Length: 300
Image 1 (cartoon, rainbow, N blue to C red):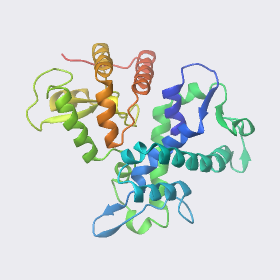
Image 2: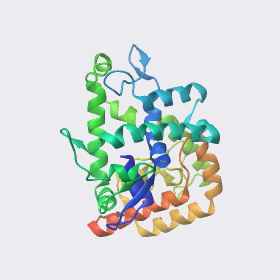
Image 3: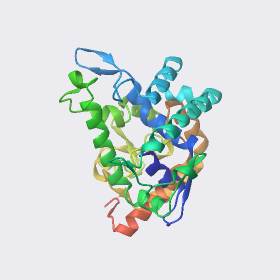
Image 4: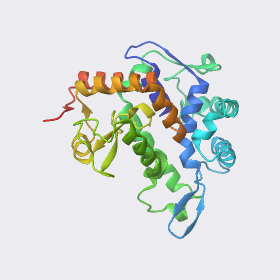
């Protein structure tokens, strides 16, 4: 999942190699694991940490759990630049030793179809055409990885008594919290003067929704510049569609005009706020739409 998302953010639709920094991969791991490392609450059971390894707890989970004892939120951890860099370096060291070494081990055989291990000691260098495939098939990769990840956590004997049959584990593991989206919405109410991003009509109090401009189903990771405020009608109608080209231009212009305030305010809630990254994701999404004939949503 981390490689797929970085290929979208940093790559292009060519058959070339893509060189990824381990610190960038580590940041993706921290983003994915931070929420999963928080205590899980379910019915009358005491809160507990999800077990993500057979045997002792996964090393990255332990590092993040330690960080959470020091910082109440991902945003606060990110704002301590010295500590954040140290955390990324520690996570990067684990990534080099474990997933990178064993990811290409298939039934006891090492098949180097993603990268050459010897060439990827300092940076991860994806082989030709790997970047292209990660970008083209990212939605399938995300869906398969999330399903397998949820199944692994659910069936782990350390979680089994509590999680057996629990329907909303994927929501806890991967989706942003409602509290986070409420905070984003309150910020966007002020930024957009409580008007719908799409139809520009005033929104009645508390009848707004936070919309992922690039739909969550296409790119299931939150970046601050991707959020817009919509009324319930437009949000429901747009659903999982990409918006039409006029809205893409409107969104890009909004981000350029309010980049500083979006970055300053939404980073406080723990979201990545990099305008270039968000726009790279959008370019990828609309290129996918063009190549595959996706229907775009617009006002009737």
